[in-house]
Length: 76
Length: 461
Image (tube, rainbow over all chains, first blue to last red; front, side):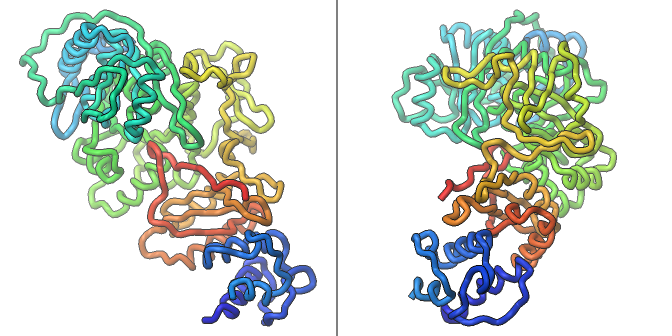
């Protein structure tokens, strides 16, 4: 699986944990508020999962990604 | 005093077993004589304060008794202290004589001696014992250090013995040593055994598997240990063909969950199950045998003259006891007590339905974006799930929330990680969102110290 698919799967899983509907989304999806709706606790979990999987994550590096693509770019 | 307990035991039960290992079997008369001989050696050494770093063994039991009989302060050092730490501590505590099982390389400021093997004692068939002088002595014990640097706690034997009932057991109790003797709970067990003229059984090692083996092979009837020990032991016992015939189970040193009490009750339906609230600094404070987690709130209404009193201040439990420690040694900045003599336990509690429930240690509270989460509340839910053998909940540093709730998990055989993680999420669904575990890690084992979970979370990011 490529990194884009991995990131989408991670975000889908976190949204599922929060009871969101499992709507498909693409790389251009906005992460917060009216986009995928991730709030601070979801983002905290996302940061922890990314850190565990890849050994680094954009949030710990001081970057605040806005879209799924921003996260993919961080690892590219 | 220890000598008075040994003297009393001789009047009634000199042939009663006191100490059983796979190598020796000493009765009270033999123990009395061995302690007298070693006490004489210690007195003649000219040492004014002694220390030891020995494994849990007949030799360590004997040294503890002999030092007390000789009226000499004894510092029992943890087995995992490095040579450098031993060097520092012997100097800091003004130790003259150190008993070890293997010579240390460092140049110490004190004399080093090895203990003669207990099996080398050659007793006359009918040991004649003379009454031992009844001196009081200090014992220096170190706190477990599960939440920070261990501290050296000073106790008088007279205070340690005042915490246990001075009554001969009619039941020939055989207690397994399932605490380490360099910790308060282990020493307190020894005090209880001497006071009740019972018998102490030592397993071949401090491994839980060896403890379980000794329960069966040495016909142990009473076991006291931590909930963490019992969780490991239950996993082993569930595979055993032959269960020990336990009449009494005590749990202490950690909060006890209702789930664990139920599991033990189901496996040992004839055993009396008790849990104890005790602190190294205060000693044994209360024991509860009603099968419920937590403590009865009625203890908050004890009168001023009670031996141990309890109160809750800002969700934290405080105790006042007549027979606690003398104080910390060489820690002038430590102020564990309030001006009016109450010991601040550091235990966070809440009262629900006339029950005091433990929420965790003050130092373990997880701060998730400014919201306090008590790890024990989460841990009790997670640990009760069938796939979970052991769980440790802690705060993990996080750039967004400061900390998040993280769980380390040891799984029971036959369970897969994904299923258990899903079950945890489902089980925690009723918790506030900040309390939900956000990071779960499957591990092979979780660090323990004296059969207690070590609880150092990662620092705030």
